Picture 1 (cartoon, rainbow, N blue to C red):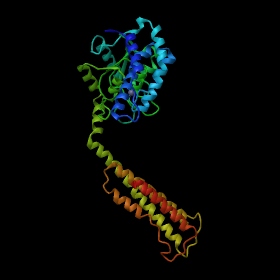
Picture 2: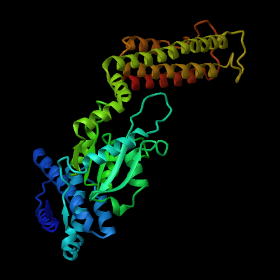
Picture 3: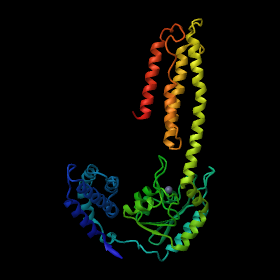
Picture 4: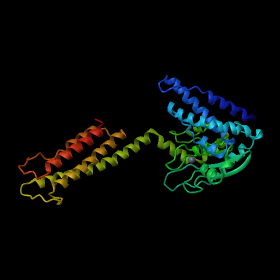
Length: 394
Ligand SMILES: [Zn+2]
């Protein structure tokens, strides 16, 4: 099917000029309608207009934030888009009619699709996994435009890099990719550790027109998000045919099993338990540290012992500091334990931590209080109280 891009763009310009906005004080439903409507408008502009713009104008258009979540971000997007409208009109005027007649990629699975999907699977088989003791997916990607093969890559072809990134960024120039179809055996990723850019963002940025996916992400928590993001950016998504999907799933059975295990409620409880156990061990070790600091404090306050600054045995300041550090760590550990939701004795532990902070009462053994101790003790108590309150959210 051939459609007239020029007419579509003219329609978009009219829409943008006539777009009815509302204010931040208006009905929330109305604001939501405005922000989602404007989000849709911006994505349409990016998809249809970018190819006919000069490079600087196209990059300004690309920079407009597409994640419009509130009326303010809609205002920002509108200001930027409005400023670009004259450029877009100029470009539309000079645009070659033939160039604006672009075949829209077919949504149905047909023709060479099978061939390229197969090629992506062959590519996936070559994947090189990180040696970190856990299974990783095997992924292959093939980039095709107008029925012609442009590039192919597999996961780990360059250590730690994803197949889509390698096929699009490392092997193809900017111009070649716009309007292309990417065949990838695994749903493109939506999050990567900073500063790596997720493959979905790259695919959108490079104006790929269609993505054909071999398998959704087996991790239940993120399954489908990649496909949804592509669809939100108006990129056509399709899946490999049934038999080829089965092949991809077979290829990744170890990774799939791993994901299933990791996301099962039992395994999540297990990992929380082992985390709790490790933290609890730390907690117990700090007990000894606290006892030692109490002993040192007691020693320092005995009347027959001479206060010697810097001597760890009878410098109460140093002893207090040790106790302080240990207690602070304990409260942080208690907090970590509380967050796992496994350790039921959290309240008991915190009570214990807070009560154990009490230094020896002044003059309890009839010992003279070394100069400065009261002040330090007060600081110590205040600080612990603050940490504990903060920790307890009080
Ligand atoms: Zn990726």
